[in-house]
Length: 257
Image (cartoon, rainbow, N blue to C red; front, side, top):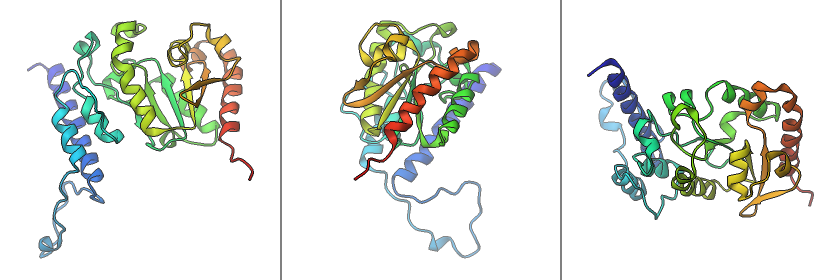
C-alpha cells in the first residue's frame, strides 16, 4: 500500500470513529471515554452500554449502499451515516471524502454552497479553505459563530478540478440537501453563489437579478448572495453581501407581540 492509499485509509478510519462516537452519543451516552484507564475498583460502577437506537442501527446497515434510497433517517447524524457510501454519480470515484455538512442541527440559518473544494475533500468538512475562512468572518460579523449555523453544499463530492457540477450530478445529490433542510427547518437559507441560488429557486436569472426580489424555498426565506470565493477576487462585492446579511438578521429578529 503506497503512502497516499495508507493516508486515505487512515482518514477513513478516523471518520468512521467520529461517526461511531456521534452514534453512541445519539444513543443516549453522555460521553465516550477514550484512552482513559478505569479508576481502581470502580469498573463495576460504570453504567451498561446503551443499545443503539433502531434508527442508527438501520443507518449503519444502509451505509454500504452505493445508491441510498428513502425512507431517509430522521436525524442528521443517522442521515449522514445512511448516505456516506453513496456512489450515485461519477464524482464518488475520485473523492477522498463525502462532505455531508456540519453545524447546529437546529440552526436558524443554513448556508448552502456549490460543491466541496480541494481542502474540503481532503478534510471531509465544508468551507475550510480560504473562502470558508472568509465565511466564518461573515458569520462572526453577524454576531454569531460557525458552530451555531449549518454549512453544506449542493453536491457532496468534489468535481474534478473544482469545476461546476453538472445537471446529472446535481440531480443525484439534491434529495440529500432537501432532507437536510427538512430536518433542520431553518428560518433562513443563504444560497452562496449563482448555481446555489438558481438551483434552490428553480430560476435561471443572473444572481444580481435574483437578489432583487424575495425568494422562498418551501416557505423558508431564501437569500441569494455572492459566494465568499467571489469576494476574495472582488472586494467591491463585500457591500452587497453585507446588505444581504442584514436582510437575514432582520428576518431573525423576534416579532413583537
